Image (tube, rainbow, N blue to C red; front, side, top):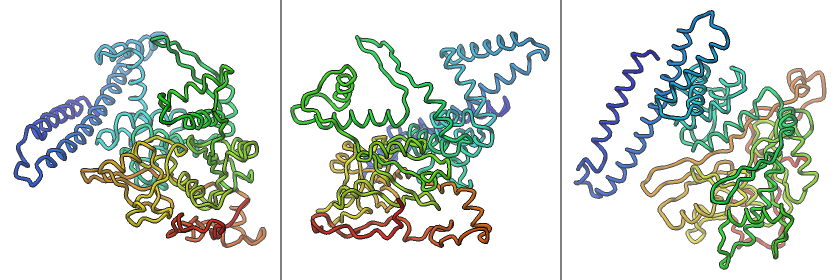
Length: 501
């Protein structure tokens, strides 16, 4: 972007903001003749919010262009024979100038210049999406962070996966800009871990050496205590304190969940005892590609509520904590769930595990509440004829469960592998995230046999790569069966999928 086009873009943004201010519902009597003028104004306010967010993103893109342009121009004016000390001083001067212009700290200005450089040189799709308002500045920053330390090809692949609908394997479900930034960052991090050129086992071994405990004083006699730990340990601590805190909640407990969780962690760490508190073990799902479990590939496993972990960690979790961690095998052709280990035939337990696998978290748009805290719920209520099949169940968190029953928010239909979307009281539809299962890696030896079958035994037809058959994916075991009608002593029917152990 040249200086002239930057000025033109700025003028266009100013004109758009001025025009938007003139048509906001409070300034325009239009709609007074509508059957429901208040609903008309309500829709108008939401449209104004959406347009303002788009203009905010376009303005952020202009800031990126301006910051990168100023830095590039300053470097171009520097003497080609300048000493390294002089170049360092010049960069410091650029940071200081930008900080003064924007009235921000030099640290903030330095971060902006670094992000502007990455966006303008290596992430063209991200900058274009920011400029047209389809993603926010927070999304763009997340993309910069998650492509850090990737080579140009890896960064381009990650960017294309989320922002190019014509990419070989585009992201499924909500477009990137329709995810809240924290959820987009999580999905981008998950994709990065899966496709990083270095194996997750190698990176985890190096990162584990940096584990540490940190203490930071804060105001009002408070302080922060944080730990940088391997994911399985951190997730186990979080799940144990959460389960213990929930066990203590009740009508006579004045503390909220966060307060109880903090109190429990403090008592355990300081060696105190907590009366009437169980020593719980969380029920955590660990998704493991079949070939990775066999040691034939280096693909990461997926820890429920966290994301990718080394397969060695997943194997250790299941070996040491068989009662707490449930292994989930995935289809070697498309990455879809293949089989869930079941220790109970009762419908509520197995269906809750299936919902956790399908949704990963509360399916309400933008909610980050993980599946362990959520509640199974009929999308179409039982009183209205809803069944207890998988396609009529969701797992909203307590907050959004109440929202469903106390407001005009209603969930849309679900499938065996897609969570329900939502319809707001204004009639707008919002999609839920999807897990984004990916085809796992095939070991080279097996690929050689597929290409040259004469070199080895015949490969069974039921594991050849290609379009998965309907029977291989798990199906709703009892789509029309309510658990009130279920015979207590009758075992579950076979699922009709290969039982791989």
